[in-house]
Image 1 (cartoon, helix red, strand yellow):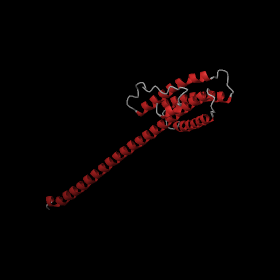
Image 2 (image 1 turned 60 degrees about the horizontal axis):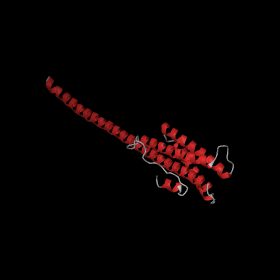
Image 3 (image 1 turned 120 degrees about the horizontal axis):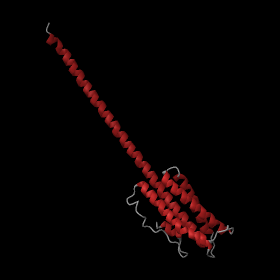
Image 4 (image 1 turned 90 degrees about the horizontal axis):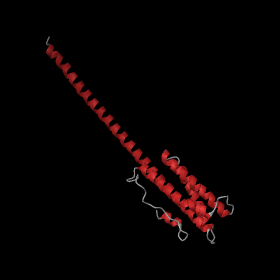
Length: 201
């Protein structure tokens, strides 16, 4: 019996099976690689969406906070004049309501350090709002006065700058760790604080 002749088909079968297994393993490795790449792309896209949603939330919160403080400033100035304050009062109520809604959404998205800053700013804005409304309604508490309320305005603009720095740092904005060069509005009785807030100052 020719052993070498009998073994030839076996060798051929083994060779075919080896080729098929090699192709199968190569295909599976390629599929795993494609899956890993797809997962990597999906994770990157999810991070990009989350970052963009957070950026939009920060823009909305910054804008709403600035308009709220500007409206408080205008209402305070209106109390020192003889003009009808109803239009200014309505703008203040709308600015307060918008800030409340934006802050409520921000509470679901902001990381804890920025959320803590935003909460402090919201509390201080609310405290000043209470003072201004009591003065407007003619029912001030002890310590409530136009001068006392005015004295809270500039520190609040600084608090808003601090909040903005925190938001920029969280987003990795270039130079976010440096002091903010924006001096913020300097309210005066002859100008609208709301218009300055809208200009981004």
